[in-house]
Length: 118
Image (cartoon, rainbow, N blue to C red; front, side, top):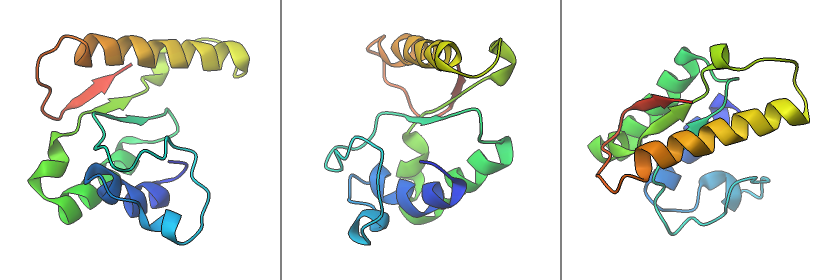
């Protein structure tokens, strides 16, 4: 998702395993496009504030109900990143997010919602 508005519009459908409305309207989508499978996690980059994430979580809860709160959120902890933007920074963020996903979801134990920082 590239904005809070896109998250509010698309995430509820994606959490339900449905095609988001933006796709049916012909808007570009940068995601996996695998809408038949419910997501195991939602990753939000460092550009999203606490308020932004709360707005998107509320949209999911409102439209999906309690089932929507079962999907864990992974958020960038921008205090942990050093240096200017660019390829090295992007690689650092990607690696930290992959490591945290493996740590939390790779254990084989059930994960029921929550927020995890990478």
